[in-house]
Image (cartoon, rainbow, N blue to C red; front, side, top):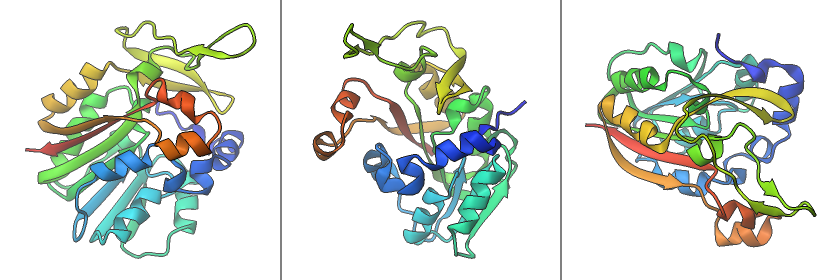
Length: 244
């Protein structure tokens, strides 16, 4: 059964109040790095998997993409995306990422931001993405970093006064299901090692172009409380790969 926490009223309400939900891409801590990994999108056909509120879809059109399709399992997400979008060249589809069925070579660019760590059989999804990409097409995705997903607790180790001591890593090579707490709710995620993320892409027929591990900018560390600690471990893994 595919997880759909975002159509639960309380969870969606909490998510809607996050900075990245109210302020868009510029409030997403990893965006300054992810943006540099995206290819030229002018006159390209773009697919956004796990499109959420449609921020990346609208960005693609700002970059003069020819057409954009955003896919999400959550009706709440899609309703908000449609409310925020006034562009006939952006189409939103209600569908699980695991169920995508598009024409071979239909897209030039596939984007997926912070959605793929919810998928159990990611190797199958990579194969589906590869099939619907044109030759030379690009996949750019971000997921929670394996250092972040290894332990279900997904939290720092604190000292006796509540001070942050370090980020614990355990059970790293024990891949699979993790039940984590996100927005005060139990959420199922899937942990994979860094090697598995890269090797499953390679096995699907991709050539890895670039890998990045999120880190805050100096400005973010100065301006945002607590952001200096985000430099102590990567929270997100970002990968750009090409259908060779």
